[in-house]
Length: 202
Image (tube, rainbow, N blue to C red):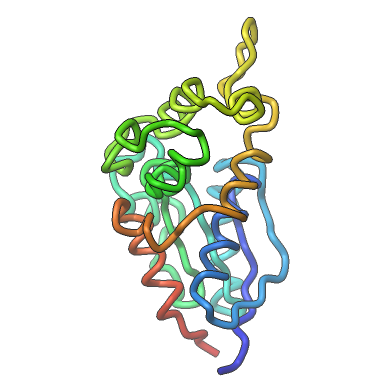
């Protein structure tokens, strides 16, 4: 099987780590080149037509963004692109945030925090604010360094802790079970299916 070269367009470091782990778990020969973005959804929204044009020119691109408050994934894609995505643009949307995909590995994440797995939601795609749910779960963690990394410090206006991406990135790289997570997140399942079946349109 020939290698599949792809570039990434992602919102942040955590999204990049999730995509890289998913591609590795497919056991297909994806070769990741450059990763663009890491500055939030605004950059991705403004540059989405450019990624579609690059894809049409023969450059496979994986674009991952969060659905956030948008009512539906197809509507978001239409709004951002103004056209149908080229087959080489793998446009995936985490419902509602990439944190829902992390939470979808209920057993692995509960073990990471050292909390009961019954506390982790069964259907994270249905959460209105997966990041806040994740942070609230981390408040219960019996692992001090994990809690201090993920939970905002007292007296700050931050919505996440000082090493949020680093701590969760370590979990994603080393312990996240993406196969188990697929069963609890329809949006992750769709992304997984796409990564497993994608063939470049040369």
